[in-house]
Image 1 (cartoon, rainbow over the protein chains, first blue to last red):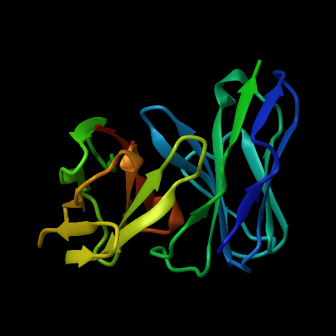
Image 2 (cartoon, rainbow over the protein chains, first blue to last red):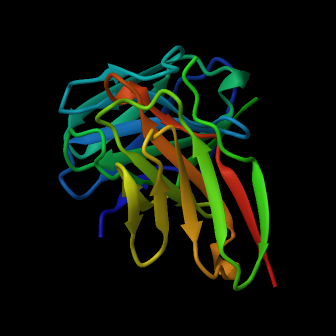
Length: 114
Length: 111
């Protein structure tokens, strides 16, 4: 089975802090994604990566950056956390580059910014 | 503005068939429709995917009309364990940033 793990299930940070969310997948998948999930808005794509050191902006990249130094690991960085970034963050991966490839999700990180 | 629309919530009873419809007016010609299921404290997981007409697997069926501007997820004989949030995912013209999730339908199955 594909396994996508996220470094933390819950995080509490203060406004202005730099926040790192880590995601690791163990199935040699090409693509990795970061979403945020908010009530009534579903999942919105922040960034995705189709290869090591490659990244593309999603719908809502403002206030976020990403890093993919190794194929299995994709990090989401909040340079200066703000209260409006309080949310559930979901990481996903997919095997190939076709848009219809199944995405496998991690359990999520619930971030609270005070 | 591109949008994928689905009902916010639905209620059902054990043993009934549940149909959840998603509207996606801007679906790209070559893109698929995918449905995911999410339980509390878990990430979404794949249920079913289709391009046109009907697809069936061991969990659900997916009905897609000829114009592909909507799709219906059908869950036969639901049980309490089917209580979850269901998301449709549709591709619009463009790259991965044009994969649009619906806001999700919260299905509650009652005894």
